[in-house]
Image (cartoon, rainbow, N blue to C red; front, side, top):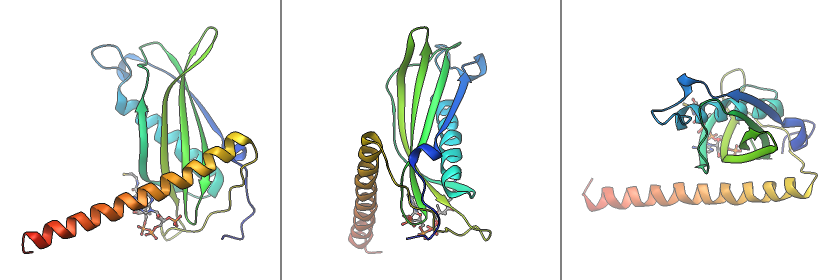
Length: 170
Ligand SMILES: CC(C)(COP(=O)(O)OP(=O)(O)OC[C@H]1O[C@@H](n2cnc3c(N)ncnc32)[C@H](O)[C@@H]1OP(=O)(O)O)[C@@H](O)C(=O)NCCC(=O)NCCS
């Protein structure tokens, strides 16, 4: 574990506000999925950087769901914060909402993994993240489960690929 001073998820929080403009939309005047993914990546990178105090790169996007369409003229907010820090990597959760007159509607959630880099662009250890609230503790636990599932998935793909290669006599 790193000897850097620990942080709380709240200390990593980033809130980004965007207005959906014509250039951000498809033929249905809905926000392009790719544009939303770009904004999610930026918000998440800033949260990871707040935690690590270093440049961080996107290592993977675990899960992204488009639950509600977002439209031309919508004001949207992206809430990003680090859910859990591992050794050199961190899981960042991003929630996207549409701002309405009487509140906000959740439109999208995503989980991304970022890795902190040193001056030689090599992965470097990050501080511990200590969850405080019940929600933060739940996200911390779920981040651990997603990491396990991701590592298992990579291992399974690796094994399957090796089996395919050997069955083709390579
Ligand atoms: C991410 C990157 C720095 C990892 O480098 P690496 O040499 O594979 O590093 P390691 O094997 O030592 O792994 C370092 C950490 O990254 C994590 N990691 C590596 N590949 C990962 C992946 N595909 N998904 C999630 N985490 C990953 C490891 O689990 C490890 O985490 P830990 O230290 O917390 O246990 C490297 O793959 C890279 O530079 N990728 C390109 C990043 C980029 O350009 N992103 C922009 C999007 S195009």
